[in-house]
Length: 320
Image 1: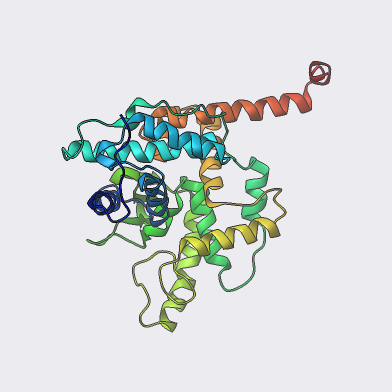
Image 2: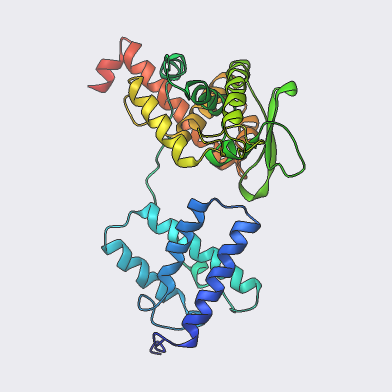
C-alpha cells in the first residue's frame, strides 16, 4: 500500500509539532533533562517531519523508519548516532502509545545498529595529580580548583555540579553538606543520591567560599545560594566550566583536551581499581543499570595490560 501523502500545511504536520513539543516538555519537567539534551532530542525527533517521512506520523511503520535510517547511514552518520536517533524515536512513540494516540510503536521493531565498544577516556592517576597540583593564577583560580577537586572526588556530572547550592534550602535541587562531607544531587531520571566528598575537595571548597564572599559583595543581585558562581555573581554556566577546564588541561600539559566528564570516568576507574566494589561505584555514579558501570572493569584491564606491556620482560616478545 502506498504511503498517504502529507501536504506541507496538512493537519498531521500541526499535530506532529504539538505532540513533539508536549513530549519534549515532559522530558524537561519529569526527567529533568538538560537544555543540551533537549536540543538533541528536538533535532532527532525533527527527522520524523515531512519530507523525510511522507506519511502522517500516526501511520508510520517500521519500514518508514528503516528507510530513514538507511538514508542517514548513507550520509555518513555513525552507528552510535543512528542508535541515539532510534532511541529518541522509541521514547516518543512510547509516549504516544501511552496516550493512546498510536496503536503500536514502530521503532520497537527495529534493532539498533551494532556499535564498536568504546572505553571512556580517563586520566591516569599521575595525570590527575599533576593537573590538580598544577599552580593556578588569576581571580578564578580558587574556584576552578574547587570544581576540579569536587569533580574528581565525587564523580559528578556537569549538570549536577552546576546545580549545587552552598547549603540546603527548600528550593534547592542539590547542595553541599560540608559538616557531613557529602553532597546531595538530583541526577538523571530525577533520582536523588548522596555522594561523599574527599578532604582535599572540602579544603579547596573552603578556600573558594572565602573568595566567593568577596565576589558576592561586588554584586548585590548575585545568586546567594549557588555554590559556584561566575565573576558577575550568577550561577556558573556549563560553557564557562568547559572553557576553564580545557584551558587548564592545556596549560598543565595533558595530552588530550580536558572535558568535565573525564573527571567522572577517572573517579569511577580509580575507585573501582582501589575497592573492587562495582555496586558501590554504580550507586555513587547514579547508574540505573550495573551494565553501565561494568565498562570500567574493561578500562581497568586496559590499564593493567599497559603496565604489563611496559614492565614484563616477556611482553615485547608477546607483542612481536
